[in-house]
Length: 482
Image 1 (tube, rainbow, N blue to C red):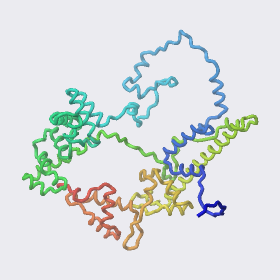
Image 2: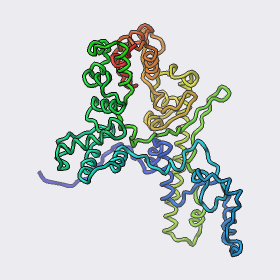
Image 3: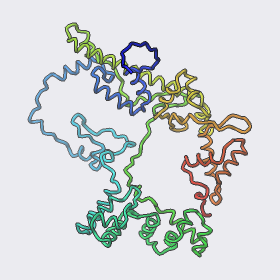
């Protein structure tokens, strides 16, 4: 077959996304903190973008001229700083770092918000479990060989405080004998927190009981011999197995349940992540007012300095082209941010219209809603609504929620009445379980029967799925002794 070159006409349809459109879509799905970071990065790369501080440029030029004037040199006779005893007595030296700033332009104490964390809390680093154990290891009376074994053991302790290596692996990894490995492990298991270095839950609980001088009590015997019965909440079989009085066994069970099965988590490196709402919805005179959170978001404007350069006739053509390109990019950035804010406002406004009863009364009155409902209401595409509601939070009179929270599947009624939102059903399941008899907790089928009596179609497996999503244990593990 011979190869030949020919011309051919072909008609195709495709979507071409310009860089500006890609930027607008990217900004639309960013959270507030991510948007601030993106704006700061763009300001660093584009000289035509600057923050609008609200000051007059003429006044700024005047201040610059004043700053250029020579200042009189200080007199040597007055260069020495003096402070009387009264001023010294007013300083709280114990909290000096928190209340006084060492910057030269600040004179006198600084107003400190008591709700903010201390500067020492910001600068200090919370120790993790390994560093806490290594600190104790450094204080122990060990030789160099035993210290190396101890560091190897600490390195194999996970975030929950459990040892993930057996004695043979420790001996092989450090080249020591089994007796040395067991001796060092016993020393580490005696460290704080109680129960650290255990190889299973049983050993962890026994170590904690030993620290409480309860190693020879009924609680320790239950952990050693009957932990499976306790895990299954089979209190009748546990009382028979212990051959003891009911009150004594239940008291021992209460002691065991007060222990921490994950002692290492109190030294976890995971920091608390605080949510900053993107939108505030507040009720004023019976109507809901929507306010976008612009705190920390720079107000952008175009630099007049570079615009004047572009308008000059004798300027370099290459420089003018560069400035013109940056001007288009800066203008599109500002318009994209404004369009993003308008879109978020319209989406939240539509959600408030659909979910008015939720804002008035709470989660129980949340209505089923999908992205299509809002898209048709504000005449936008569903993909746009999905981007707007991703990673964004709204503060309401009922609490702070992610915008995705308001979109729920519908749970129909047997009598053909108004459907319920899945979030409202979850909240109802949580309330039913909270009000149940602790000695006889309700099964998933019993909860499904309660909804069936209210003409709500809810299968047992759906109850189990919602219960697991909320982190609620099954009925046999919720049973408590009475």
